[in-house]
Image (tube, rainbow, N blue to C red):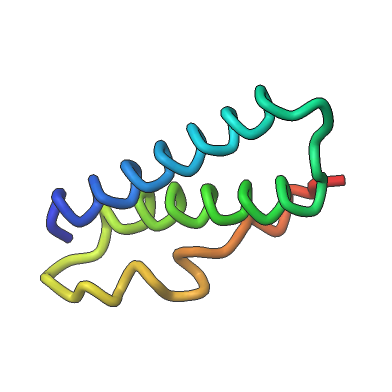
Length: 78
């Protein structure tokens, strides 16, 4: 997998995490549902970055599988 494609995943995660941090700092309370959705989105970028390093060739759609994007089944946000 091309590193520039992987870098875009971690860059997106960084941007979304920065947005989430700003929203939390600017608000007097945390919207739990919105925060869980945003964390899932951030995690999908991080997971595609991590798994994408093992994808050979130039298939740009390969990181976007459910397996490469899914939140781990051993972590529960409550």
